[in-house]
Amino acid sequence: MKQKLKKYLPRSLYRFLRRTYRWWQIWRVRRLGKFDFVPQLKNTKPRVLFYHASGMSFGGSEKFLQIMAKHLNKDKYEVYFMYSSQEPHGREEYLKSSGVNLIDFSYDSVSGEWPFYIKGMRPSIFDILEKNNIDLVITAGAGYPEYPIANISKLPIVFVNIFGGINPQENIRKHMCISNLLAEILKEELPGDKIEVIPIPSEEPDADAEKRGRALRARLGIGEADIVFGRIGRPEDNIFDPIGIRAFQLVVTEHPRTHYLIMAPPPVLKKIVREERIINVHFLPPSAKEEDIWAFYAAIDVLAHFRKDGETMGLNIAEAMLSGKPIISHKSRYWNAHLEYLDKPFAFVAEVDDVPAYAAAMKFFTEDKSKRKMRDMGKLAKAKAISLFHIDRNIGRIESVIRRALP
Image (cartoon, rainbow, N blue to C red; front, top):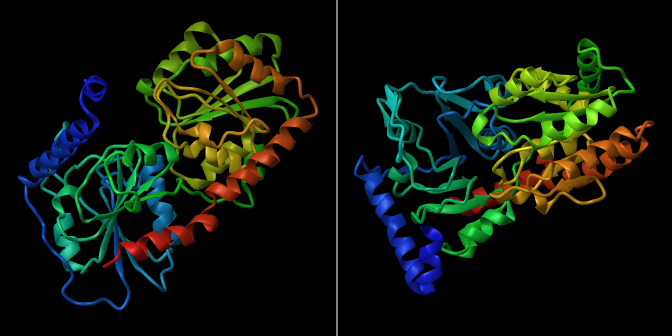
């Protein structure tokens, strides 16, 4: 429907209708309540509240908020982080001893459809904003007006945009897009000076990651000379793409010392492996612990990424690169922001559904018996990742966005 309107309506009329629809969305959400609070007293340090109901989970959106909160200069900012332990969580330990004030809230119910009204928040975000005299809210989401952020009408907001939705509310001072692809979408309807491109940042592996990676391989019976492909992502069937496992199925019959280590596997993938008896596939449960995540990356030789809807940035790819791993991926019919940084010297990218091309990339690495090529490619991947994704390279830009968003 959207594409038909865009094709047949004059551009000015199409943009007017889209913007009118967005303001109708805001009006609809604010029928559930409108919060006009602004600080009456000046704080000695700006007070920043990070908000996300599932903010302590291990998804890319949530990890972006967590790493920003952890690395913001506490000499300059008072930092609060509001989340609900009724949602997927487990990463509270990551922010402990970082100077972040954690605020856990409970609720009675969340509506299953837009605008995702949260009933019975205890404490409510509005009480927290007023009680703590908050100066700025930072949140992340698909981008559309939703409860309770759209109900905050005056307090400055920095919005981390994950899926290109558009919210024109005026108190969103900055839309932080995680890729150029998303920024171009937002520029169709929002002022360019409100849009900033900052990819989801991460840290480097810790000093003991390699040791834990070797131990994980040994526990799974994987030899030091064996080639291990890896995939990590949300364990959801709706984003599963079979290209990786189908390619591996072809390769492992010829190269039996090849393995596929998959963390947080979707149920449909486990079913395929079980019913078709694909050998050398190892499953690891999801984990919110940093030590488990970096051990996974250390244990693999190559990230063999797959995701049906593609990536609007791809934190898992960025973290594999930071761990010095080459990348195999594929194009998607939906999002392809990962193509912005996957360079040929360290990455292979198959076309949509092109299992033979994906398998050929896997075979390239299985034939690299000394692992020299993959190590050289991994060094190039790491150098690129440090320049683009390392938090040390991005925290200054993030703090600049915050400073400009503050009143």
